[in-house]
Length: 522
Image (cartoon, rainbow, N blue to C red; front, side, top):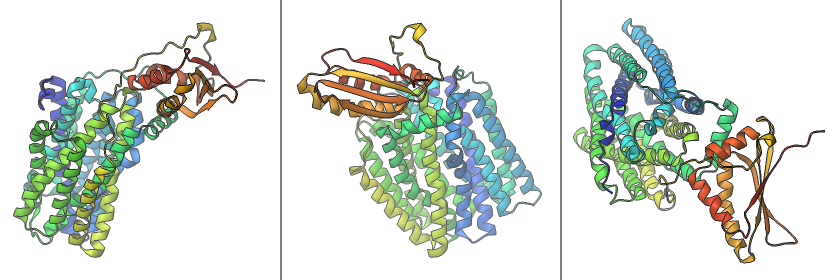
């Protein structure tokens, strides 16, 4: 099969329009970040305060991630993205006015940065989840890389522009451009005709519980989240402390800071072009290890090297950044099923942004106490260790290559037997009769079936066997309500799950028999 062109999704009109809108918004966000950080550099010598810009910008994703994921799965994603961008545009406009009239101080800057971050956080899971609505399955990885390229390409353009504009016109000007970028994104989303939301959305409590159950019982997803945290927690040091280094031994102004960030972004753009050519030659796990090592070298160097050598290393760091997130982002999108896609992505974004937000506080506080150079060196060493950890904590086999299709199951119930949707809890009992020599293989397979049941709705699960007849096994699990059980069977069990269930059933001598029980009323 011919490899998919990295630019293929851009041939699809709506993807192109939304991609350009996301690029413009990301440029505005980076201009806002540079303007905010440089305002604090010039008005405070405290590295911890400067690093709080990153925390204020990203902390909302940690606080609102699960709610944003529920909203994106339960309601129309187009309206959610539209409303969130208009909210962020309003917060950015107020910040612009405050800065323009000379009333800006560190407290108000961080407050409005946080509010803008809230708007971005509410839209993020929906943004991540719409790629499969815009491009076919085989272009998901290319679409994911292009989405990352929009953010990182903005890192190449936005900071360089912001550095010059802040020098010429002051922070208020770039804050205003950021507000305009959010309005532009809202217009682009408004013209998109998105698929409608679900006809019967889940209640928030049920939906959040179902999402967390899925994550707990999905080893592939948990490993993606772990690899993300191992990279992002130390990787956040470079973005948190680079403006401090620029104002320290590098002795550059806001323009120089923008150009160094631009080197990172330029590397990311180069990475988008190079990665499709090497992805079939280098395994994803090896690529993750190499990328962490290279980014660690650049992080360490930021505390010691002169600007020219650092800029060169930052280009390679940008390539490493895009490689890491192209692999992790596409892996989680191609592993999550549709019913829980936005909630799963919201947890991924919580780990990504939470690691950066909390990491920025940590690295900023350590730099205040010990100086930025040794702290950057320590973060670089941790990144190298994260790269080596791929040997023992790799992405699990078949990550990103599972069958996520869903086919409704025939429960074999007569219509008059159908319980009330709110009836429950439902106890499901599946009877299996095995040949004696198949028991060990069956029990091993049922451990995988247990995970499938748990991530699609089961609260408790156990497998028991008869004391008097070694051929008789019973699978017993509980689901909260009959409605939840129907969702499990008709909307959540994927092709991958069915293969496991069918493989276990194939070891039986007779067709497994399923029975359902509800609490007995007086």
